[in-house]
Image 1 (spheres, rainbow, N blue to C red):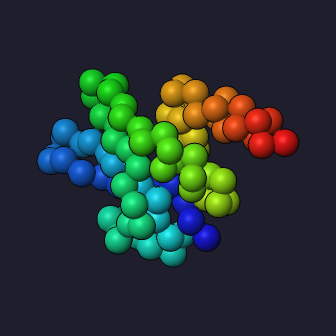
Image 2 (cartoon, rainbow, N blue to C red):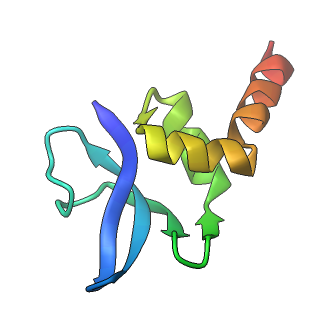
Length: 88
């Protein structure tokens, strides 16, 4: 099973996170399938690769709670629901 979760980068006391698609059994800094975004909690900046995230969500990837909250603020789930209604 694939999850969308945060991968810690940066230095001490200055963490930044990559949002990655990763196998559930991998550890936090394990090998990821694909980098799909970036999140800086200190400056509250976010970069998301929307097509890649939507692709993984359509294939059944489960976001963690934090990634879900970040994605919800960016409006990914409204876009996902719009795509579902357009397909039907």
